[in-house]
Image (cartoon, rainbow, N blue to C red):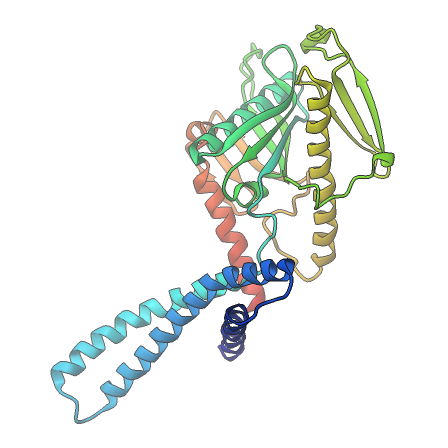
Length: 358
């Protein structure tokens, strides 16, 4: 615990330093003051937990001294032993709480997210599954009190989605959804299957933290913007003007298309929002790859090709392969009741990261 105690002392000392600095003249410019205020605010819960831990440790030491005192009253000793036993159970939980608060935070956790769901292998059945997943996330967002806004939906005409994109806004959206990126596999009997055979198909999910303009600078000269006429499923025309927008980011080759709005200006703004998120995600992925050697184990790499979960309809089973979690309540999961899976993924990630700093 000595290394941890040293770290706790440094954190508490830094907190006091910032408090003193802000109470005196403070930083000369507003930007420095805002930066200090944020650091002070971020350290607040950590220092509060440290103080609670230190208080419990002091209390435990005092009780131990009382129990060792031969002149102490027997009744007092009995009460002290009760309190000491209670503290012995409490201390590990307080230590873990402090360690969790000390874990490096993902700066994107508090951000909104852009959800992209695409049909994979499996033809129309894969497209129908992609539509099911998109609806599942919409239900989950509703249960969380988040705002779910479809941005682009490419339908097959039979109820399936070739591709669907949505913005999800709310508190800590990305923190909850960031482990959803990857290949989702479904096993079920398609409605079109006369013989009743179980088919396996897949859809890919990508969850990107929403990026602000200050996060990603996009140079207009790096963009090729094409406008064309919007069309509905099966080529059916839904708009008589050239309002659909396709943006190609020349340096990376990324292509984003938007046609849901009747206004070309609104479609361009939405397409740029998605492009910005994808560029921001690419930069995050690059940094994650640099850290990969230091951190071998993590809850999914975010690799779009990684098979992360299987939805088996005949057995009513949902299995997350990364943490070996199987739930036999697939119907409820598909209705958006995903907290049990997501909480387990977050807890597993925290445990892995804690093991690396201990």
